Amino acid sequence: MTDSISVPILTTFINNFFTLTHQFYANYRTSLLIFTGTALSVWLYNRLWTNRSLCPSLALMTGKTVVITGGNSGIGYETAKELAIRGARVIIASRNVERGQIAVDTLREKTGSKQIEFMQCDLCSLDSVRKFCKTFNENESRLDCLINNADGYNSIIQANYLGHFLLTNLLLDKLKQCKPSRIVNVSSGLHYSVKHIDWNDIFSQFKDRSLFGPYSSSKAFQIMFTKKLKDDLGKAGVNSFATNPGWVWTSIQNPMREAIGLLGFLIFYPLLYAAKIFFAQNSKTGAQTTIYCAVASELINSNEVYFASRVKRKAKWNFKESKSAPNCSKPFQEVIKRIFPRQLYELDMGRLHSSIASQPTTSTPQPLSRNQSKMRTSSNLPTLQTSSQRRIQGQDRTSSSVKHPPASSNVDESSITVRRLSSNLKGRLPDDTVNILNDWFDSHVDHPYPTKDEKLELAEQCGVSLQKVSTWFNNRRTRTRNTRPKQIQDDLLRQIEHLKSVVVLQQQTPYSPLF
Ligand SMILES: NC(=O)c1ccc[n+]([C@@H]2O[C@H](COP(=O)([O-])OP(=O)(O)OC[C@H]3O[C@@H](n4cnc5c(N)ncnc54)[C@H](OP(=O)(O)O)[C@@H]3O)[C@@H](O)[C@H]2O)c1
Image (cartoon, rainbow, N blue to C red):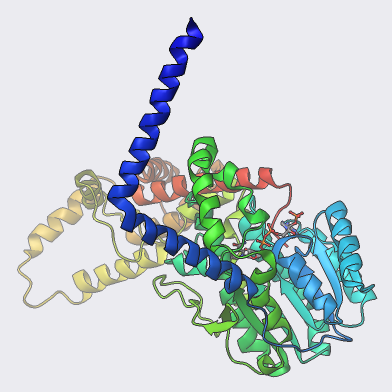
């Protein structure tokens, strides 16, 4: 009975399906043909052209030693393979011993080269980088090409930039000894998306929660580093290049699931996979620009910094939007001083607090709230100024009001006298005394509570009573609490938030980027 009902339903469904398909085809035949033709052409172009474009240079690397980070998979693996085929001694520097050794064994088998080695180097651990460089410098006689290729997802800035920065610096002597030698930094076209870099708050890059935010910044840092290396070492025979491999389908795509969440992944991944069929390169093709920069003899003295698809391109390295972006002509120690996470040195909240509180608040005065301006006028003590500013102002006040009263001043002398008198009656202290007390206060801003002995000393120094000193400190503490500008509080909160994110980041990876 059920079967006799379901058969006609199925037949109707199939009939309807074919009718609708036929109708759709009849209505959109031309569009469908154009779409299919375009897709086929793009696919063929990708298969037959993009993924077959190889490095035009046939230069051999016999007798040369190459270090390649992250050479156990993806673009790095293919680069290592090609350089080994060209006769180089290849050292794969990667974090995982097992994966590294498997890659070395496979490469030896595929290339027939016995000159492929693995050495452990975890770019997220600066100790590991140091250990690697020490072993390398002690045991290897040459380094002709350093390829900074590895890419880390969880600690992007550290794996992509800081680790490579240290690695390069520690291997520089070997590179100089083997000149003409090269450094190739595998960067990315995404560096163009970086609008500015806040050099005073480098960890703001981490706060950028967008999918490619910190990644793009790390790649922008790499390009600036390349430019700096080129400027400083090009003449010494160590040339540097940054490369953009284009879009390559490798395990770099894997952390996407973690980055965009399950729902995003389920929607986005099929689209990405479809796009991959038409547009992505395979690892072998993706490695060609790096290989070109590592081997091409025409690039020995090249002034070009950035290559994509084996062709020179204009990179963005001068982030003009950021007022404090480093000038590329400064020595790179200067650059790293800025790039380094100043905040990490200040994890001690007390020190952070005092350093922020004692900062000259602003170069341009902030408008005060009504209460604040009232308080300033009444106390005659601009609590937000530094002592030196106050001193200068005190001098100015003295000089203008006492020594050189303006000739055209409309101020009534008697009213000044009355104000002075009332000020004395109210127990205000002379400017000199206030300056001394302010100096003490500013230098003890994290705990502005003088002991009795200190108060006595201050009282003696200022020629006022102990009671007056105590009262002044009570008032000043209240004023400071009440009038600390919102900006300072916001700064403090911002930096504390910031530090929290750094601490979280540090918890994700057990290593500190300080060295
Ligand atoms: N694929 C693309 O579309 C694309 C586009 C533009 C630029 N790039 C750049 O090309 C380079 C190579 O990328 P890929 O696609 O070949 O990536 P991949 O397949 O994910 O390879 C990354 C390599 O880096 C290693 N690595 C990760 N963290 C490390 C660490 N802390 N210390 C040492 N090694 C570490 C990985 O080792 P494990 O095997 O242990 O993870 C792996 O061998 C990267 O710099 C990437 O940013 C890629």
